[in-house]
Length: 213
Image 1 (cartoon, one colour):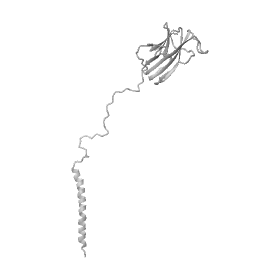
Image 2: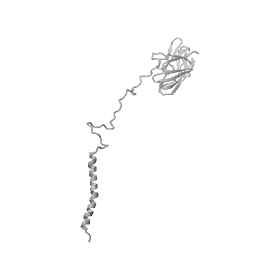
Image 3: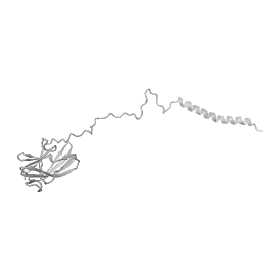
Image 4: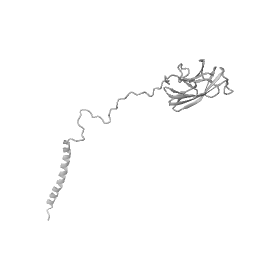
């Protein structure tokens, strides 16, 4: 009859060997790694390590406040230009650049329709004018133009019934306007003057077109 008790102890001995190895490996892993320096451990430091998200931004540089409005057009200091009818005046202002052309001029002794009075000074000087913004922005209105006759007498715009003057404010680049300027004048010889800041700004004209019928 086989010795069952001896077989039991033999089997127990065989089973305890791998269990002991497993326990020994776990113990070595827990205590052995603890004594060795780890590559992922942070070195000791007396201060709190900086966060990777706390990178300082560069110091701000001086910049223009774009919310500040412009103080208005600033006409270039170039000398006034005298042109002939049909020629184009190039004007630079603080807002941009413009082309202004007096295309043609008529001298009339009567209004263009029966509902408008005839000129009380003797003549209507009627000029066909075109304006184009070539850079930035620009403005155009009838008060930028003035008639000055050969004797130095000046007149602002008048209504002759021959058409409306060009008009536009804060026009963008490539914008165009055209129309008719009319002046009530005592002489048909003189010049049409242009003032970017307005004919009554007490400044020098930016350009003028001679009228010699």
